Amino acid sequence: MSHKVTRIDLKCSSPGTSRFLTVHKFIGAAAGPKIYLQAALHADEWPGLLALQHLLPALIELDNRGQLLGEIILVPYANPIGMDQKINGVVLGRQSFSAEGNFNRHWPDLSAVVAQLLSSNEAATVSEIKQALREAVQQLPTQTPLKHLKATLLSLSIDADIVLDLHCDSQALLHLYSNFRHVKQAETLAKHLRIPVLLLEDEPGVTPFDAAHILPWLTVAEKINHSCFSATVELRGFADVNDEFAAQDARGLLSYLSSQGLIAGELYPVEPFAVSSTELTAVDAVMAPCTGIICWQVALGEAVVKGQLIAEIVDLTAANPVAGRTAVYSKTSGVLFAMGMAKLVTVGENVAKIAGTEKFDRKAGEQLLSL
Image (spheres, rainbow, N blue to C red):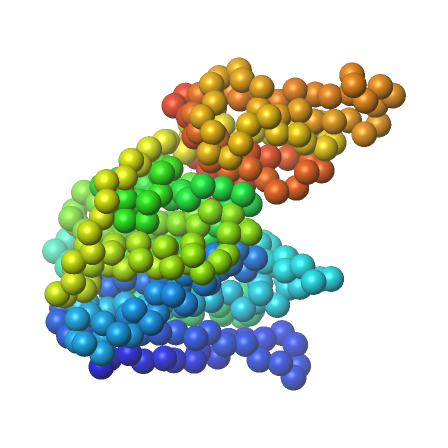
């Protein structure tokens, strides 16, 4: 039995209060990869919180039977700072109230650390690179509660072989963000979790949590045949928090862990499932052309064609309500896999995402709702 539960105290900005992380660690009976899972880095995205609560009992049982291999680190809630940002009963957990920005942006890029190691030691091993990354994380700034949280989470995850960051969108199908180097691994994960939409990029440019684990290895990709497979898993939408979905997602995660050599003596059959891959630059980030009430003409998950009417926006200031409607058209053919929950939309607001095939003239990840 290797399951250990640890409390890690975090810095807190308010006198008389405290914050901490709960960390579950499983060390397997035999060697294997290290996997790190966390939920709700965006603290108002809760499906992953319940999914990990369904996964934990299964891991504990497997651990008691001595069937776990490798190392599993599970952080059931990754952002107690954001979870505390509640105003009038609403958690605003995407942006930090400390003016330090989006919780899933601008994570430290440790690529230079790995590049420096390889420049002085071309024969550096994977173990030596991981050790250099661990040492670099120990030197990260921790002056503010958020910087301390980031350094703490990275201290748990930076040397992992697989990193899964569980998020959700506003209203959405299951979808997954990964990169071109790991397309096979991403497709495997998507099949186990029954994720129909896989979004691929080289690097999103804003250093989210997953990129912080990929970038150091991409720097030395020509010399080292190893990389951390790190992905952002979007578990549907904000409202999709229930035992049925959570149990389904936990089964998928368990099945995936087995496929990656972390569970011995168990077979988890995976039914055939179609996964559609789309370059992130080929996603139509649908923008509201005006302000008003949006009336959708298509449903979530529906296939659309380029030029199709997908919504109308009612101008509340129009003298003639019948004439005061503005049409919204798809700019690509594909699947509408995410849409905003709000019915009152603002001009320029990103209201939906369509996974298509035609590339748009923008950077990967730019103007998208989530991540």
